[in-house]
Image 1 (cartoon, one colour):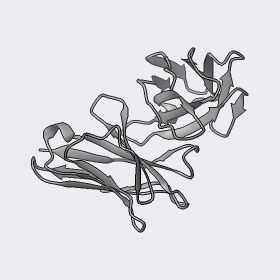
Image 2 (image 1 turned 120 degrees about the vertical axis):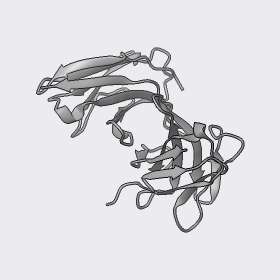
Image 3 (image 1 turned 30 degrees about the horizontal axis):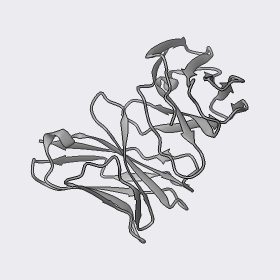
Image 4 (image 1 turned 30 degrees about the vertical axis):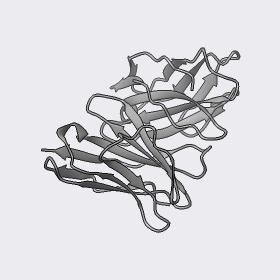
Length: 111
Length: 113
């Protein structure tokens, strides 16, 4: 699976949009981009995933660049409860492939 | 629709004892994954099981650790003769199929005294 690079930490004001970037310049054509988050002391929580089209669900939006070398997770109106470590993972979606977690981005949402 | 369940949530063992961690996947999920998170570190894959079969155990230590997912009942991660270095949070995840997203349980925090 391709390697991802994320900033170590980010800050966001409550109510503002949080934009979390991820670089995956060596991504292969059959690899999806997955986002998970881990709130302190809890199990990781699935957020969203996509291949090349932008995706949106009730939690977030995922914007993938046309060359697929980077993506951005957008939390449109961040709340204090969104404070967590956010992991960007690339993974093949056919056959078997496990999740490889990196260090992620620590997002701190402040009042 | 209950999520992934793990028990116990906290487990304390003395060095040399055995630890048994249980994971009940989401309803309808037959694929189970175990991960370990050492203090101040990221999650590391340990083992992937599909009902009664171990598919990938490449992340599991060769000694003292074993996992099973019987036809009936939860998946079990067993650690024999625990040592202080086994202290960690152990997370289980399940998926509907091997291609689908994995959903994680709340974890079991093992402390070895």
